[in-house]
Amino acid sequence: MAANGTNGSASTLSETPATPRVLEELHSPIFAALHEAKAKKGMSFEDVAKAIGRSEVYTAAIFYGQAKPLPEDLDALSKALEIPSGALTASLGPSFWPHRAGLIQELPPRDPVIYRLYEAVLVYGHPIKHLIHEKFGDGIMSAIDFNGEVERVPDPKGDRVRLTLEGKYLAYKRW
Image (tube, rainbow, N blue to C red; front, side):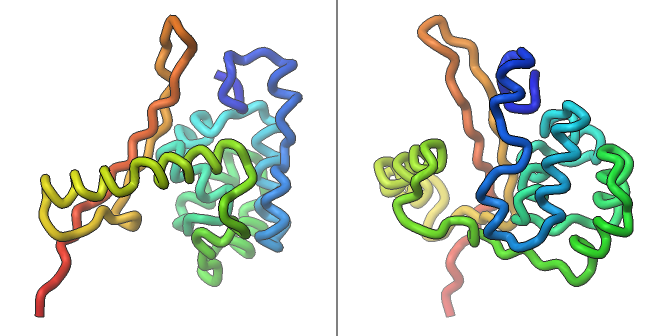
């Protein structure tokens, strides 16, 4: 699979910018450097994730400043992408703390993919919330103790996207 999630044709890879514009919001050149190195090596997030021993979603979250990599993640990224480890550690090491959800500057979001995710939460959020309460009780799904996955599911009517959002159930405390 190509870096942009398509069937791997070179023309579709070149249509995806190496550095997404949203990275300007992060005010650090390291995120653009990660994306550019990934594109230069022709790697997908799946490839990078395998190289660093993390999931695709978590790996992509590092590239967007939404996850805090461990020192061993930075070492593995340095080797996989041929980025000097000192540059990664200086930008994403002990003094880096993610500004989670900081990339959404307006609601509703204008990016079509993010808007459709937002729309899915608007339409199905309350029904899913109700189902969580029915199945687990009064609580929430954690986005901290969390795993996510994106899969391509072949379908004769057009391939489908399967999102798996798996978070630890956290019951509300009574005091």
